[in-house]
Length: 314
Ligand SMILES: Cc1ncc(C[n+]2csc(CCOP(=O)(O)OP(=O)(O)O)c2C)c(N)n1
Ligand code: SF4
Ligand SMILES: [Mg+2]
Image (cartoon, rainbow, N blue to C red; front, side, top):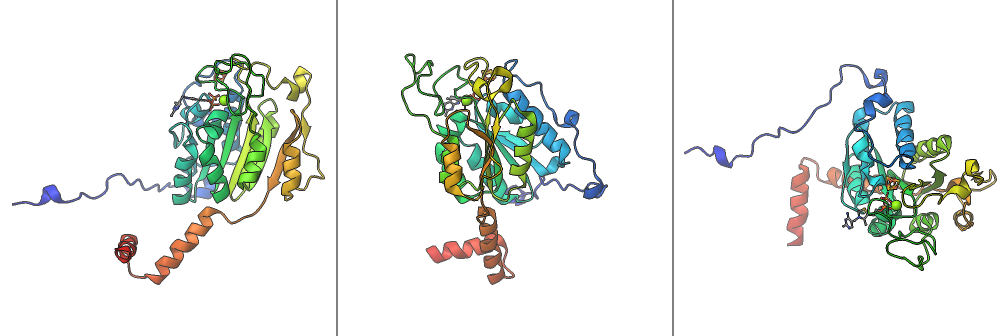
């Protein structure tokens, strides 16, 4: 009798990318090639600007198609990966960072970008935010902060200011909002920056700096929800009579306390890089452990090494 039924067929799903042109000579992607479906955001939503600048970043830095991945949770802002014609995932609410951590640790050659809303990142995903930051997993997280739950039509979010009237706080929000910059610094993020969708050059500058950072880089990007919180960021927009002020040149980005003090300024505060440090990444630390174990177990396949450690635990 044939045993074919019980044999595992060879893997069919491994795609070997063997471009005929050497990598250095390949042209980067154009916006036209990377822009996917028509974004379904409301006209005027700040998220359009963040998406356009992400395209610009990919174009400017000539990032190849197979070298970038775009990951998000759930929310208006988290629809982001739908609109990018490249590898990525629109994942579970609040879980973008756990998914992105897996991608980053298993594929260190990729630029991993995660996009979240204030609810996705700091309510349901608050736990993952803290742990990804403290572990310093290499990736860039852009939180498109609109101070409200947009997708579910106006509930109070963790960044909504006190007094904000929403469907969950009809008489005005009472809870003290979290400060994303303070939270990122204290949780251990090694790159912490702030920008706003109304200043495209600055958004691009922050994205580039974040991408070049070896570690968990976090950007809070103010991104107005014109439908449920119109005018929220006018005070930071010179075209609406507000002021956009950069982090002072004298600011020492390696000084955690100075960064914390900047984060504590009243709105609209400052924009730019608040904090940056070079703590070892989770990626580097894991790679070291893996290489060490492999070298002590030469001749064994990875699964045999794993089996050996399980056997030891019996
Ligand atoms: C487990 C789970 N809980 C709740 C929801 C409902 N939900 C979808 S998006 C969202 C909040 C979105 O707010 P935010 O992350 O700020 O994104 P925005 O829409 O404002 O960009 C909520 C509560 C859900 N989809 N899944
Ligand atoms: S509801 Fe708000 S956040 Fe959502 S697409 Fe519309 S303007 Fe943007
Ligand atoms: Mg929001």
